[in-house]
Length: 112
Image (cartoon, rainbow, N blue to C red; front, side, top):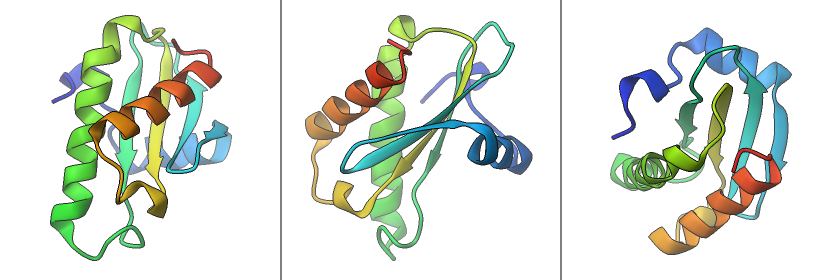
């Protein structure tokens, strides 16, 4: 679980990030990044019903992504809000493939 101070919460925070954030994408994942003027980076995860109608599949993807972020937090630059969005191509991927794509995205966004 990502520590509480590193979680992006509230509908308005997600909306602001969706409107004003920089977009970076890979085949299975996309992120929106925006500076937040805080001493730590915050993360939010979006897995829509389009990915799977089954909550267990959506929750599994979110759990895997949260764990990847938790382990990478010491390497991630502070001061950014990041929204991780899952695309339909992510459903058949395993943990290591998701990790590879998320690391690539964070590197492209210059957060690592």
